[in-house]
Amino acid sequence: MLKLLEKLMYAGVGAVALTEEKAREIVAELEKKGHVTGDEGKKMVKDLVEKGKHHSEELRKTISTEVKKTLDNLHVVKKEDFDALHREVHELNAKIDTLLAGSKN
Image (cartoon, rainbow, N blue to C red; front, side, top):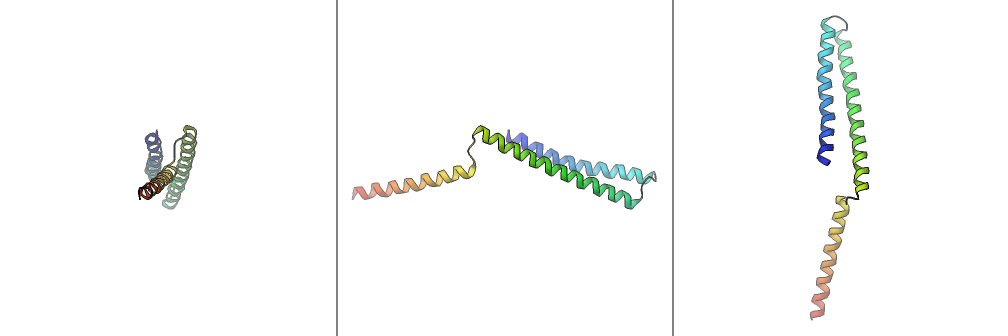
């Protein structure tokens, strides 16, 4: 499931790149036909790319939020929680070893 979501995020980034390329093509065609000047075309491309990046970032945030909700609903243990429990178990094992070693003496 996480791989699928990762692919969706990369698709969003790829769409932005594709949009920039397409925007440049369309604007170049408009410039060639005399509908826009070079400066107007550059501004159009810049505006379109900025909007695409904004939408891509919004998509990433939405996906991230939904993934977190889904993982919470599935009661999946977070890595930091797992690591904290791992440290605690390690510390307890060390204390047990110390107690056992002391009781043998």
